[in-house]
Image (cartoon, rainbow, N blue to C red; front, side, top):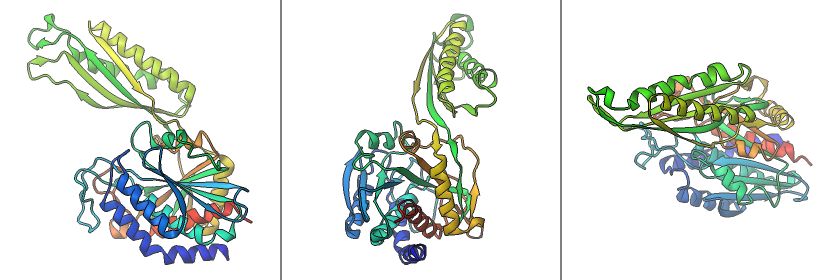
Length: 395
């Protein structure tokens, strides 16, 4: 009866959920700048009669839905608010109106579904014991991440959740399906910044200069040893470089070259050791060429750990709600997600929800200018998140 009621409400609120998503998609805001997004969320929570606090850890919002015996148990549900610095390519009516900013990672979808899931739970609050905490989190896309700011601001206290649940769109998975994985799910991620300094000059007089461009190239090549020779083959590891700025000319070797990249893994001890290798190799390679290397590694998100019991319970609930044929097992991912900060604090489950619809030619990937979703999945995600929360707080 409870499950059928949730499905009924998810269907009833579907068109409004689509409206929330399209409104947010049309008006995206970058990390730590989500003031209008937060105002919209707050206005809807107020309309639903859900009590909440604003400006938590930036533009974050924490809402509480109290069922029977509110102090008994607590489950937290999380969505993210921010968009990306991408110029959208779309002819849809809800295309971004903010130049160079786009919801290309589905955070508009996550927020819309959590709003409607919260509305369902508020209407059904007499059917569960305890409290549901809704976390609308800013700045998932930018270090140090809005999750850590929410934690620092006390967002996981008063009450402290017994577990936390998050869902994220997955374009490679068909709309209507969801995927789970227990244990280590998503990688840690650190940002690598290397500056090579030397004596620049005329490219036709190499004996008078330090060839910073060549040295930078050698640093990138030598750093491949971090993965190929220093990393255990049993620990997934990625070290990639995506940006090199050598602002010289055809016949000018610059005195400075910038290299930027990312390091990802699933082991904290190896993570620390690898960064020592990166610094040592970069500095020694530069010194061998008569130059210097300054290495700055910005600590990113930890790896995301899905608690086995919390994930088992959520997966079981998904099978009950969607049918076994619509629940799949996922592989580990080398992408990062600041939900990992919560997973280091609480038993957590972060699962993926499909958006792909080949018939509608909806197949744009995350972080691309053509990303979009089959909006029918909004009903699936709304109802499922409410059902998982109810399952955790059964009377």
